[in-house]
Amino acid sequence: MQNYLHRAPFYALILLLSIMHAPLNAALNIEIFGGGATRIPITIVPFSAESRLPQSITTVVAADLERTGLFRLVDSLGHTPHEPEEIAYADWQSRGASALVIGNTTILPDGRIEVRFRLMDVAKQAQLTGFASTVSADQLRAVAHRIADIVYEALTGDIGVFSTRIAYVLKQGNKYALQVADSDGHNAQSVIEYTEPIISPAWSPDGSKLAYVSFENKKPVVYVQTLSTRERKAVANFKGSNSAPAWSPDGSKLAVVLTMHGGSQIFLINADGSGLQRLSQSSGIDTEPSFSPDGRSIIFTSDRGGSPQIYRMAITGNQAGTAERLTFEGSYNVSPRYSPDGKSFAYIHRHGGRFNVVVQDFARRQVQILTDSKFDESPSFAPNGKMILYATEIGERGILSAVSSDGQTKQRLTSQTGDIREPVWGPLLKSQRTGNFIN
Amino acid sequence: MGGGGMGAGAQEGMGAGAGAGGFGMNPLRDPSNILSRRSVYFDFDSYTIKNEYRDLVLAHARYLRDNSNARVLLQGNTDERGSREYNLALGQRRADSVKNAMLLSGARDHQIEAVSLGEEKPRAAGRDESSWIENRRADILYQGE
Image 1: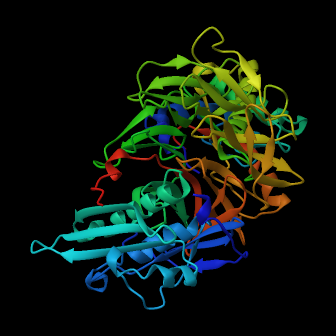
Image 2: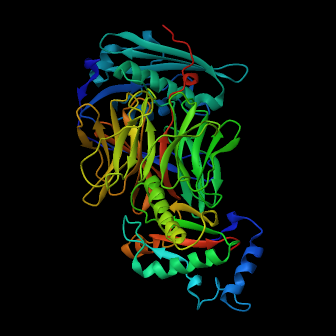
Image 3: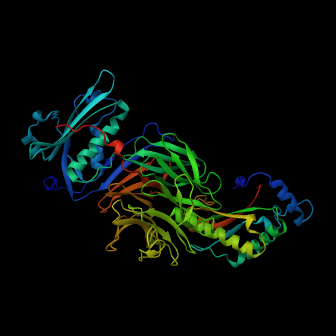
């Protein structure tokens, strides 16, 4: 796909997106800055009859692609082909577009909408991929994210994550809300709201549940809540503190941090709260476990060496229980997260009074600082490993930010009315991958 | 900052302990009694009890020793900087430090629950050193308060 990569100047873009129906009336803004040196020039042509729909599709597709920093939107200048035979390729080439997204929408008698789209290669004058789906009006944003995923995958070779969701905690005054939103910040819904703190949300691998820590009973207790039914259960409510839930990759177990035996130590429980088993053994603090993608080891924060550092420990096999120190730069390295491919991990590194997001390669131990803000927390990889979502602050207000794992592109997600913190990116879901490819 | 989670039935416990400080006056509430002081402060990234708080912790330990029905919840706190989960663990170590000192002075294990609020419940909302000092703290809450 090298033919799509063109040199493009650095530029910044601000997109203002407002949230509808957010229970806490939070308006989230997304702001993008930076960007890779190479961007794919693409035109997203408005689909036929799209103006009659309650929700535009192509504006969502365009915003998704632009947010990655990998695409440059080329204006259609009023030209609106909807079918391959309507494309004057030479004109698009002269406008500088390497790829075209075209499509149709049809409102069916039952009110549903048929959406058809094609991704066209301007240089080859050929279709790269296409897709058709029939949906209800409230699924139009979801279809748009799916189209953006297909375009992204066809042009970059990576997995698209626009159809995924994020979770975070919104604090407004004395109120804490655990919210779930689309990856672009839209459709934010409160999972729970309390007047006591909520921290450390964690998605189950199938995306159906969230584990989190609530202080509603005057001390931290780990809950698991099913999103569809809102049913929830305290899965770790032992004497002392219960916190830092992390799902095993198969979703059957949770690593949690308990103080029932004195000190913060990592334990394993079944997802229903049964089957308590101790994992770490130290006289210090062991916390913030993160499972390797193969489920055989965890990385975690420990102060066993005198300062908080990241360690890795096998939890199965001969080496189970033996911890290996991974970080050596500085006196404060916390909040580790495995990358989805298991080859690197992200964490928060303190240096010169700043707390920043870094990624470290397991094989070469190479460390790269990705951010330059002052108080970054809670890094979380996108399921394709290309972006890292984290909490930071601007003007003493908590906001979310995402940085590409090469440090080139950043986006910000801010609330006008509160602090956002504790973000975590949800998994890729197979159910989001429906629809028929068309030729 | 209530201890409501500790549940009911505390009145009996308080009543039994009230005699320790004289007639009628609950020593836990008497401003002239060291037992009315409930906060132990810590240095940055430290969970060592400083000498100036030894008497305070010792007094509460003796009260627990002499009032077997009394129960306390120890809540450890930290300033806002750094990881929330690491701060939760650090707050726990602060609460545990107070608990261990109390156990060494005669309080019994089942009388004390040590928990952490981490950086989540700052008493001082500012973003400066004086607020951070105030928030690096362990609080002693008696059941029923």
